[in-house]
Image (cartoon, rainbow, N blue to C red):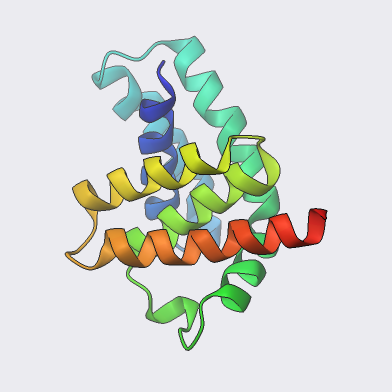
Length: 141
């Protein structure tokens, strides 16, 4: 499965998480992996790859949200649209914890924002992620 497809599935899973109570999320995720992925022609190995990355991403969500809150000047994370919020989470995960080159993670997030987000989403996503990357670079020096 291509990296872009994996990102789209991760975005969908994060989006799905927003609409279900904590005790329902596992069941909804299982339905996603058992029904939706196979309907899109994805096999067991594809599902395993997506699931592994999603499980890894979930571990870092509290830290990711904390970093996003710090970098989103004058914005509350709950005020951000669901698509944009989860694109930011996904790209921040890739930049900070998944060793994806920052430029690639930002570009992919912006492209997905153009497809799934509102009119202002690409610029907003780009701006917040640029601050995340700058802070990361400043702390590494």
